[in-house]
Image (cartoon, rainbow, N blue to C red; front, side, top):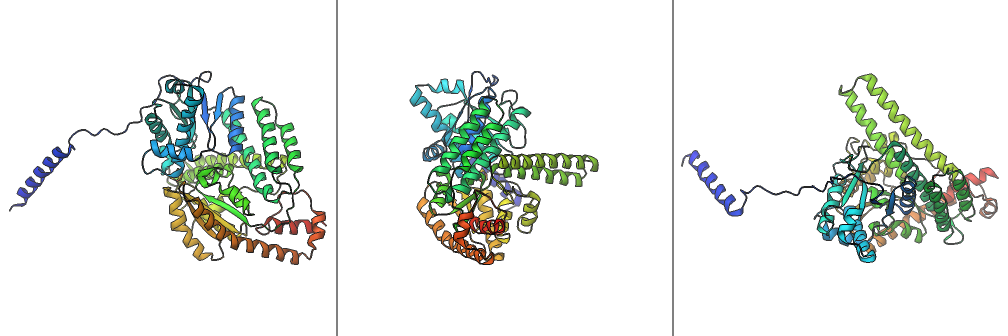
Length: 503
Ligand code: SF4
């Protein structure tokens, strides 16, 4: 049989099959058409937002209130959110998408149930604002995912607005109007939230009376939030907050394992069921946690912008002069952010705390992970793991990878095993957060903590011997310092080095 004949028969067969299966119709794809025709009205719309930590959400809420917005912060996403996310979201999303999207749906449903509002009233009077990006992971699809789930949950047309992490604003003039002044005010709230959280993580494990740190955090947040909302200067509120933290009595001379929580941004930051309340679980097991501040994420974004510009300049897209100018501008922004972080840290009494150096982090990780790859935490996870053990910063590194997360799973399962093969002393554990399986995660963490505790204890004893100090004597001399210059991983061991030099 001639080949042209075979081709003809095949084409005929294909057309028959297409006809039978209905594939000749024009496909109807999902179309994100929920764009409003009326501009956002700050006097009518109540802005909803949330899903960072409690401190950040409260301070951002105060900032927006201070700028004249009607605003409500969503509660920390929980299992109700996960359930709604799975019910109304697309299949195959990553865990943070389910939690955060479902959390909004749940909040709106609760508004209807508790306040007797109809879905039409909610759609008319409320709006949601969130960050987004055009990255290679699902973060780029969040806004569409919100709109799809809201439509299926009966809130079709609900206004979801995004400001992109690259600085662009979605759908202007109909979207959320974010001025330079508002951006700076929001950044201020983020930095203060970071410092308050870091103080809590540092102090809680060592407090003498349980609950005092939480109380100091809550009271200081109240003071600062009220000053922000009333548009007052923050000097007094910060000074009174520092005094509140200073009043908490600590015993820092306890060898506790220091655990770095790394991994996907939302999963390591949230304080709820999205990561099985990992921070509180670790503290209940006698560990001290360190979680990346959100300011470090901004530093990464600035670094990525610098790297992209350098690449574009090399490729001849910008003149050498324009490229240099851009680098200087970004360096200046980076310095200002770091400087402001240090300023707030000092005001609240958190000394010797340093934000990561992004250039060093990139250099540390480049042998294992191409730094040009974006998405998720990029190369940061790799760099942080290496620095943790090479530079003696932590006794255990826990990587939280959400179920269904492409970048984080790729790094935790693909790259980190190679890193740990080269750094056999690294105590590293990757845990997957799927919403269920908490018992399994807790028991794996407990096993890793056993080794971390031993390292912390032996490091502490070594410091006591090296400095030839009597522990009891040191306890009498201890001061209310919370952060000490870094020598080794443990807080107690660093305290020994620092306090013995002060004798
Ligand atoms: S980094 Fe992972 S978990 Fe986070 S949005 Fe992207 S795919 Fe989802």
